[in-house]
Image (tube, rainbow, N blue to C red; front, side, top):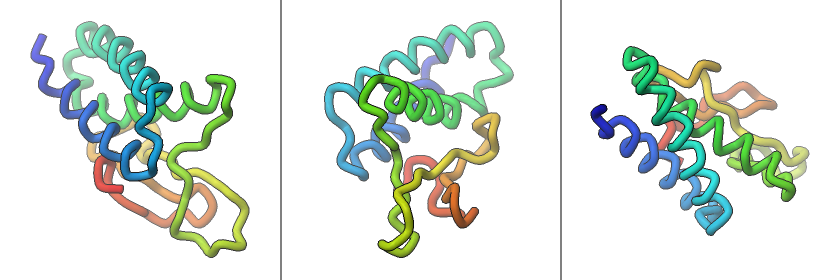
Length: 116
């Protein structure tokens, strides 16, 4: 299997974790877990490689939120400060191709995955 797509996904998600100050041990561990799962997934469905980056980002979001700390990542920073804390989500829902971060409150596009 060509692992380039997985390492590109890892780099994009790690960049966005770091951009929001969340690239600590727990988040990187969640990223590695997601990479392992999606590595198996792309071996089973090679045509799905266009979806890997967005799916890895969604997996990391879920792992961070469900991991006991209920960490929201990435938190929206484009809405007014008086808005309730809320997250961005990856669109399209299947993770690709060309995944983007969208504000869950306003629906505004914030950035492509890897460009937070």
